[in-house]
Image (cartoon, rainbow, N blue to C red; front, top):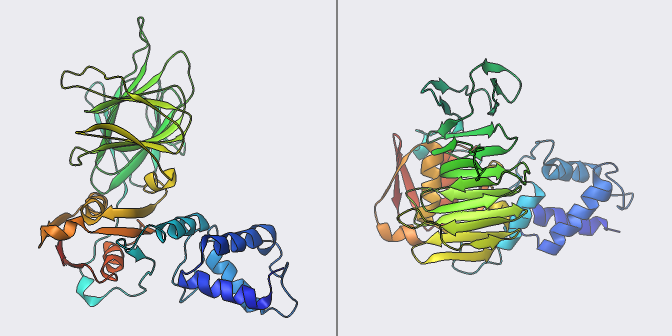
Length: 374
């Protein structure tokens, strides 16, 4: 049984961001088994009810309610990521605090991105998709949004969906697979279901998360400028931005074959990925690493999660999502590593304030330009 003193101490550490993984697990077990339905379960009778209610408001990620003054108001899975971040090493800076008030120097703030995309049909027609919708469903007879609203009766067996900087969108493909596009990305769907080789083909530029419908007769193939991925049915993320030095493929479920492409377009032998593995393709070839896949799809789940990541890489993500230009007063600072997390639906000032709280970097917003200074 958790005593009153233990409960108060643990919730205080939770709110301050100082819980160990074991303490977070203890709170999660209490929350899941007793706290949600019986707040005083496993607690002494004299426990302060307002303490329990205050903790539940902070802890319950489904309600979305936030406790005033709490330094952390994140779902538990993100907190467990934070606990892992804390173990990374002394060269990484952990970001926990969220400022309640935007400093006056960030009065010219920038809002986050949202649902933005265009659909280009095989006949050349371009459709500006609704910013009020989250995604579309494409089949052979009509186009609809995911809520069932009709777009038009166009046949769209082949098409390209594109997101701008500051935009994301979801598309359910004609074969039943679903893809989520990150900012500044495009996906072209062009099935080849005739002849000896029958594939469901997509070409990707940028980043997308896929949940592929199983079809043993028609393998699903994702091609980027530098690699080819072949699957039958699985969940995976591909990051293949042209302005980055590596292409990363992260597997969450099933298995995928990842092969690099030569300058002539021919395919190399490749590697097979298993769940929680990530392949990294760069000038040195393909390497495979074991990772926590939730960090790779944080963007899809509305979060920025940085694990000992270079500032330049972090600012690339910020630039795409907020549609800004990033300029460094001293390029050397771009190599400094940072770790942490924050909702990507905060204004850019909140993200910058978190980075500034480390004392290692400063920012200045000028229009849609962010100056980075040591």
